[in-house]
Image (spheres, helix red, strand yellow):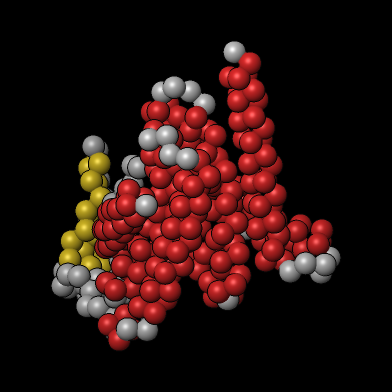
Length: 301
């Protein structure tokens, strides 16, 4: 319990800070017309980190239990219970934080009129001067493109990009695709959890509980070999697959498929939890049968 609690807290806080910085950089890079407050961005980052904490906390907690040879049923019960309590408590806290007055107060845009943005490359780069500053990014600007004369634009260039042949500006993103896809799926998972929370506490607890139940059933993956690091790597792949599967099950297309299959016999919100619980029960049954076979072989020898 102590290891899991500390591990979850550190993972949640660190990932929240990193995600918050990433959101701030993205906000500065895009110069969005929708100026959000730092508190709202922090709440958004915390929701993303909560999804990471859900998956990462369970994975690290189960891995620790396997290495320390903790009694499996007790370890599963402890990890599942603590995860559900943390997810529910933090979700409730974040939902209440959005009503704090600073969260509804817009922040001042960064920079002043005449702000210079540069998109440099090996062959040169585009330089954009925002004459009215980032407070009005769709206002007038001066664009300097290599090999071309200075161009004055009275309106935002993005409204007529083809006419001016303007390269992407102001920055580029060279992050590997697998990291981008992971960040996207975690954001989608955060949206799913928030949607379930808004549908009611019962719906949220059923969905979160079934997901935690399914993830905890993957404990057997962390026992496949005698190398803990290799088992942890396999566990990361398995959890990444579950995350992608969860996002896929919650797409509008799959919801339509579930709706046509259930035909109002059960609420649509129960479709994904039933799948998680059903697969989880099968995995637990498989693990129990493997345990019985190993025990019989041990007594026979």
